[in-house]
Length: 156
Image 1 (tube, helix red, strand yellow):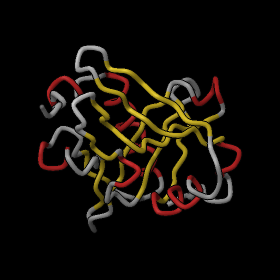
Image 2 (cartoon, rainbow, N blue to C red; image 1 turned 30 degrees about the horizontal axis):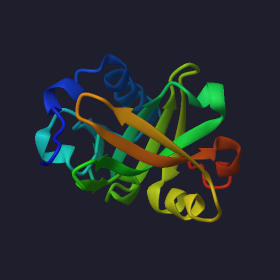
Image 3 (cartoon, rainbow, N blue to C red; image 1 turned 30 degrees about the vertical axis):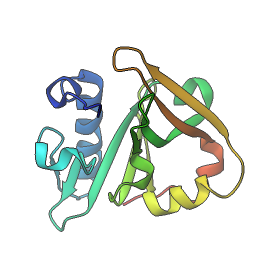
């Protein structure tokens, strides 16, 4: 049995929606116009929340724990279920950039996904799991200290 997300429920989370808006406004101040595609089902599978006019895609992560832990979560497996269904996480998506919004401090951390992926796999990391009891599956990934990412942080 394949587990599916409910698109209509996920996009209504106010924190995520505001995080997308904050990133869009932040880049507008830098002269970069981004279209919000977070509610467009054709972009849902790719994970893109924002698209530039020239097609650059961005996935926005609203993270309420960066300021507490000093880590960003890097999702390797989105769904790992008892019935052996496995879906790779956003770490393997085709978006060009990942923006983490430190929700508590309203700070945007911007990374080119290919560089973030290289850094993630550069050494052993602490893992994490999140259990989803209603659907009975785990999300699995690793934690990367934000201080280790300063060399790859980018400003567009």
